[in-house]
Length: 185
Image 1 (cartoon, rainbow, N blue to C red):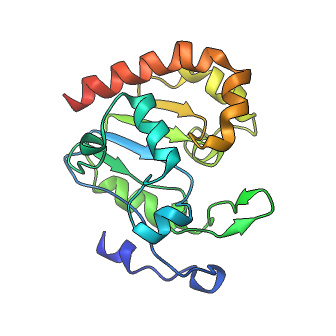
Image 2 (image 1 turned 90 degrees about the vertical axis):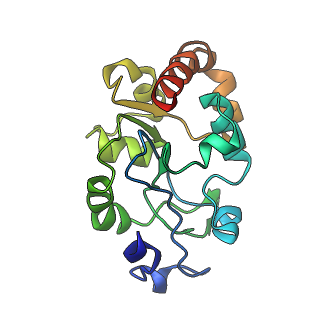
C-alpha cells in the first residue's frame, strides 16, 4: 500500500497530480474494482466519497461505516488517480495502474470472495470480455456469479441507462445485496 500511495508513474499526464485512492486490508472479503477517482474523491482522498458512492452503498444495502471499514471491504480502481476532465465527463482511467499494481495488491488480499466490477474498464480487464457493451455484460451477470458481479457505474450520469434497464434494479440489486450481506456478516 505504501508503494502505491507514493506512485508517480503517471505524474506527467495528470493535471491535478498523483493521489492514489485505494482501501485495502488482508481481512477484507468483498472487493470493489471501480474506474478511477473523480475530482471530489481526488480532493478528499476517500474512495466513492461522492454521489456515485451514495448510490453504490444504496445498491449494496450498506451504510458508510460498513463501506469504509477496510477489514470488511476493499476498494481498488482501475486507475488509482483522478485522470482529469474530458469532453463528456472524466477521462478514462490511466492504463498503467492495473498492470503495475493490481496483481501485487490482490496478493495482499487473500480473503476476497466477492468482487464487484464497476464499469466497462474493470469488466473487460477481469472478465476477459470481448468488447461487449456494458449492458450485454451486466445482463449476463449470472455467468460470472458468485465470484464476480458486473455493475454499471453508479454515477448520476447513468440515470438514463437505469431507466432504460429496469431489470437491473429488479434482478441484480437483490442478488447483490444478499451476497454483500452474506460476506460482510
